[in-house]
Length: 354
Image 1: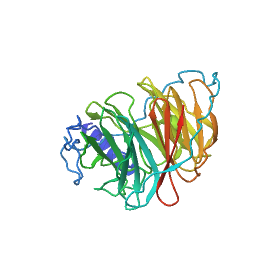
Image 2: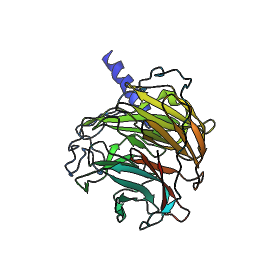
Image 3: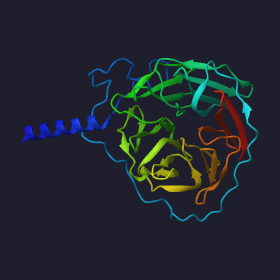
């Protein structure tokens, strides 16, 4: 019997490797933000040390799901869409930028990350005095747009998809960046990740593997296993992720069948049924931001907004095009910022009061 179990486990592990999804649980040494290595995984080739690398599981689990928190029919009134300023140019980086930017508010400043044509991540910080210089983060070749999150005060965690299809992480604490490290040496992603923080100190990730939405979280000093979100169905493009209240998440994905943008709420430890963001379709990745308890979504030259239990309002977003992704951020509780890439490989910025 024991031999049969061993053979069965080996076969299951082999099937998992073919599928390209590795379950894992990692103790992230130094994750308190000391400015050191900050992660137990390095950029060196994988080793067999169980303290520093993922432990394969026999199958890829499904993320917990539950019924909708409220009836699927919306009872609230649609809200007015933001009135945006004209787009203003952002100082140019050292190289032309490609893909779409991502933005993050930290301590009264806005960090804007983008991928350069040199395959490095570039970022610039805007504060009350304007823009600082652009900075380049070397160490890996990135294949898609980076994702950033601040789960602790004064700290930034950056995630990027390498040209090898693996996901990498880099952390800034105390104004210093550590080195890139692998999040998972087994799982190969097909599009840029998205990151949010549903609770202080917690990092939540979503990504696309094949046509599935997968999710994992860093809780305390340990990552949980990647899990497929069944309520997403088959998707294309990269996802978006935002947290509007403690313990909650909202993922936004593009449905493969028709390009519709879907909202997938997460609350009380479970993913809820998806709903269509009416009036918003996407050919590129969506982005989303929460402000004042409301959600604002952007995709392919369009914008949408909704209050809790209300239908979405949607309209074109002036000054943007369908083939360029938007980076959106709540710079303050009542101010939104959006960034988009120009045809010349620079960025431009618009703002709105909400």
